[in-house]
Length: 491
Image (cartoon, rainbow, N blue to C red):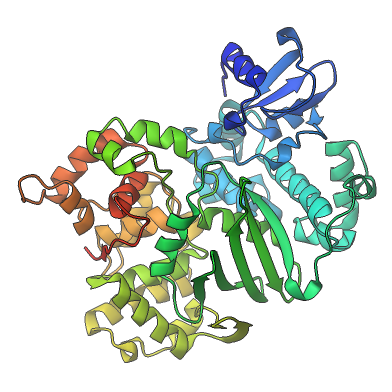
């Protein structure tokens, strides 16, 4: 991406941490790259270059600064606004697609050629897909070296490396030090009882309105699977056969979310961290989004200085099932139905604190009597069609394409309309421009003189909100409260 060098240097020289993650500064004389706010001596303008992401800086031959730790910066919002294909590719890379296959398979999932995908990455990101994936793995491994006492072999597997040899090689190439040297340099770490789980620190772009996040998720928490209490969100999880639970809480005075994991084995921790980041929408540039939406007087009043995020989902399939259960019923009604579904079909898992089950798998739900939980026949048929499509892999959440393509594929299923499709795209797929135009809460917010606008009129009003319509919806749903305002999850 093209960056304004003069503007970037002024921001870097100010040491203003609000620019953290928006760009990275590489110093030609030292061969390192830094984040804004680095306490090191300020280099001269002629000795610096600016990059949109860490991978681009490393591909140019620079290594991360050991003082400001640029690899711990939140996801670069410079990636937002790239082409839709690159945005989806970055999401798939974050999901570990290149850990399981090559650039060719990634390109095939996106419906483009491998050569074209490389050209797009060169233009929009400044680094190749493999470089982005490699940087992701190396930086996550560095975090595990600093924050945990896991053995090197387990860190290699948890960070997505196929072997300890590859892990050692990547760490030396990236940080110019061996893994053992980095671990020794971290200093003494507070002892963490293994029974209390493994703790990861997830960087978050400030500000984070954690109370609002908890209020939204707490109102929708599925009994037995999720719980919100004591300032923390907890849930059961299963990743590649590894079962356990996670607990997330904001750390006072820090732009960090502490993620405590209790797992049967420390595998694919990088995938767990990425999914948690999407669940809490940690990488959203809330200041830029609010500045754009505040051009609309209604949204400016509704925002009132708040930082709005769109809570995502731990698992897209789970969210899609919940969306179908929530059609034409209240939030509380949808939670009740989901709780019955879990008790009837979920695998038992004693995780403590009221967490008793895993959310049911598509294979298990496909065999279940879904009408038995209190659904109408029409709703049961809609849910059955969704479950069967996912089980048979005719519907794959990681290959739905653009927002319009995803909505079209979801709405093609019996019983799933535009509202449900956009709701799934908004929360399960992380589409920032998803917009359930027929939502009753949105239409009430846009009403004039007591008259509700049509879905088409709501869409016309929302044109000015692009590409952040999903954030506008959350703003209207939670205006004047911390998210506890009752909204109908119905069309």
